[in-house]
Image 1: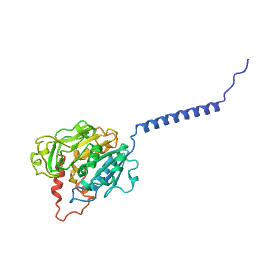
Image 2: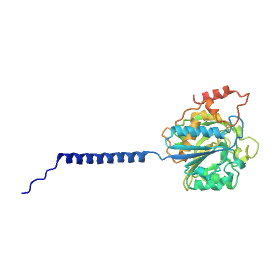
Image 3: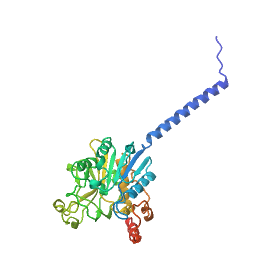
Image 4: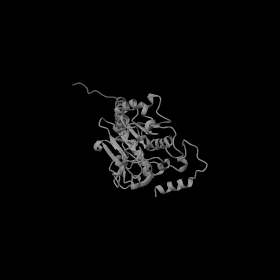
Length: 326
């Protein structure tokens, strides 16, 4: 009978160490894989701002976008933002890897996208999201208007839409990611309304809806001021912010307010914008919406296009901001 082979103790210890090391490595790899799988994909958001136009604290394209971009970076993991000032970026590579584009600029024939419709269309065809804020929802009727309507679901059409200042009371918010964490609120702005939307509102989800005062419909006829179609809708609700899911993929958002830069100090107003930008980028909006620190008046006055007028009175604005979130 052959003798039983003997395994030396040092060899046993060596094999045990190797086995334990292999198991530890496998566990670490598994945990790393799970972490990577659960982490949100990084998103790039490109802000395009128009040139200075209106007076102090109004149509603050650059300052508004800088504030929103900063709040997104601070509060949404994986968000990367780039803000381009004074028009469409000259370098086509500016949009490389973009998940969403946010435009805040003058509208009509001077809209920043007017000379770049083909480039913008090619980007959106790839699924890039697009948000247009305030005057940026206005482009000339015809091919440009049809394009913007197909990109974000609706647009301001001259001699159809109107641009009055009024106090909008948003009594109900929809069940939509953009409305997460936003309670009903009331705020005055230059809320454009009676947009030219997609037929039967197909793919369009209203986000902010209110009934304008009758006097906003009684203005004389004009490209922006009034028309019989608007007057026929006395007492009817109008959509002033909306979301859109394009049939070929990609998302759009239109927001007609933001004439006054100071309105970004309103928590609901600001959260709608932050939620919408996250949503058009294809990212998940947090259950309670995007949290963000309320800007002070001093912060709101940074990056403004014009110097502060000598006769400017801060107290009325400060009191308005204090009353926003009571």
